[in-house]
Image (cartoon, rainbow, N blue to C red; front, side, top):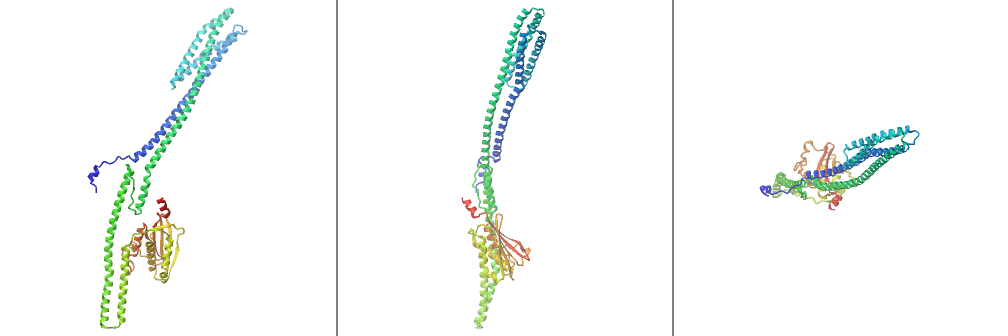
Length: 520
């Protein structure tokens, strides 16, 4: 045994918590998809922002500048017609209306730009719009400067100085053509900027698609790695579960070869220690039970043999007197026969005790339980016929082969059949049946006898307990011992005036097919 102090001082290997590893894996998956979601939202908002500024600002600005440019062309045409137009009042009215419209339209475009600049836009868009605003402001300023020239032109025309008016018109037309080129340039730049934004949005879309695809693949790869890692982390739990099932079936020597620096490894180590402790305790219990059984057997043997020995001694004395007196030899032969009967009875008692005390461990092999039942009944057919007992069979078809010791199970079945015969002294019917019941195969023996008293049901499987005056009380305990050695059980399923049913249950966990699969 290791010293507890030494064990306590021995440094334990660092354990990575299973909970920590599972939570870390799930966290990585969540972070991966969170990053993917955030990046998707960022690209979506960026694309939406570009489309929105195009629709709400650049397209109206382009339309406004184009409209100004068209108005400017018509304005120049009307200026050419002004000196020679027969209906100068109408031409003047149109020119005056255009003079009022142009500053107002420019102010609306500047107001549109100002509203856009107040929004959350990129630095590039802000710089571009500020430049356009400055150029539009200069055009507006130039329109204001031309107003005095228009007033002088009208005064010249009203006083009949047409030649001077023509010179003035040419000067105005040069200025208007220059403003027209400025407006045309602004329109071209805005259109080009829209084209650039569209191309940039398309490029961002392509890059976003590629980025999202790569991020999705990375997230899926990380998720796959985490899932595989978690699965490998939790696979030993299946081994632990199977080991627990084996221990539940009584296989206390089960051990788990698993060494890991986490809770599952600690659980496996604790399980191994537990099975070792259970096996040791079970062995101690078996030894204690054997000692108690030996004591009971010694007392029972003493009780069983004392009376026959006394009878043998008395008969021997009587035989001696008969031989000394030279009496009738028939009396001597009767005494000898009585002594032989007692000796046979003692032999039967000792054989029963030896069978119970020296039951060897089973040597199982795959065999047919239905075949064993028919063979056992056939072996006892003469005995059954003498007792006027009929046997009915209800054997499950296609019953799988089981792993059992044919000799021991046959001995248990014969014991149950003989008990059934003794329960029907006037004859009757014995029904033997087999059936599959979950993970067990059951063999039932039902008689039509007098049944077992209810108060005796809890004791019939105890050693040396018997309801028969001539019984040893070892038949049913022997059946129970054989069944337990096979990992099974025996029970009295029902009893009463209509008879009793005893059931032998054998595990079918280790069938031939499963044994091959396990070896593979």
